[in-house]
Image 1 (tube, one colour):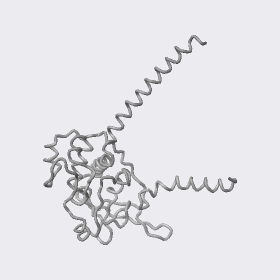
Image 2: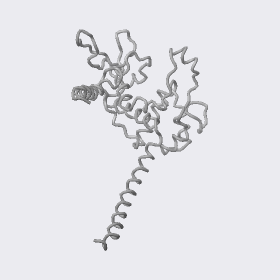
Image 3: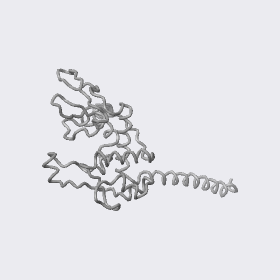
Amino acid sequence: MNNKLFSVIFSLAVAIALVGPLFAAGGGTALQHANVNVRDTAAVQRGAKLFVNYCLSCHSASYMRYNRLAEDLGLDEELVMDNLVFADVKIGETMDIAMRPADAEAWLGKVPPDLSLISRSRGADWLYTYMLTFYQDESGGWNNLALPNVSMPHVFWQLQGIQKPVYATHDGIEVVDHLTLGKPGLQSPEEYEGTVRDLVTFLDYLGEPAKVKRKNVGVWVLLFLALFALIAYALKAEYWRDVH
């Protein structure tokens, strides 16, 4: 590879590394860090409650069963049935919705996606940014910085309030520069960020329920390997002591 070609490839790699994060949200807005922790069982529990109250009427989570949710979150099955199940289903069934795809397309324009793997597909930071950047445009409808022309309404608008766009002109093109809170919601901005973080924490857990157990097992594996390395070193030293 000649030096000129190497310089071009290197320059492209640097440009992608610098510019990529700015547009990773898909709408040209920088991602905000969610800082979720799936080991925070209380946060996952709060997120589960938000999910079933605000999301599950349209979005299913068909890879998750209610009894698995109860087991992972340390909840009694009766408690789950009383507080997280609002349909005529059994504890061993999956988190599906009653709305049929044909009806969803007729009423909403498209079938809302299943959210079982949305965190693995989009990432926690994207989901966090998405739920924070809804705003009301000039038409009076909902739009979003992370996903422009979004078809989903802002289900948390009563909690967050109504954000309005502030425009700026860049290179002759008018774009949304930032958002301002036009009408306060039931929660302060800090409280709403905590609410969104809880929901995203649950979605992150939903994408890989075994993540917590896998990480816990990984810690014990590393400790075992460290102990085994010490024993192996001591054994090696004992074998080679007479040789030296």
